[in-house]
Length: 208
Image (tube, rainbow, N blue to C red):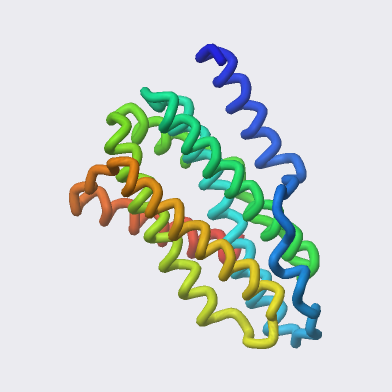
């Protein structure tokens, strides 16, 4: 595709991510689990945590699309696009679980997408190795974040837990693939800034 074609695809993906339903290419891991009755308190907690996870997938779509758009090698572009397709599964799974829990997605999803797309463009402009390094750090932080959610999700909410556990495995693999592709290690201040931005996003999305 030409650069213009890729830009059009990115705009289309943005609209689908923020406003349209996502369609998974893999079965929902939570579908194998019984939908256990939850107390109002546990349902509210699970809904808030899954809303945060859904926001994370909105951001992941934006990041990968922007980094694919700015990739300098076809190999890296294809790697980013493949990761984005797998993140689309996560987007669909978390939205489905939100609906089951009677919870809504974040009202700030357009803002999350736009900000993440800008960050992805910046990472891509710094070169392929730095862009891959950004993937490694992002996925490591997401993996830790999901581990925290597995600790906090109600034990009886097996559907949400199955989705989060599968997402965690995918994120770990994305980081490993980026490392294998030659990712550069990001400077410590950049990693700290990314953690700060992530904390702001998660704390806000938990409520809004």
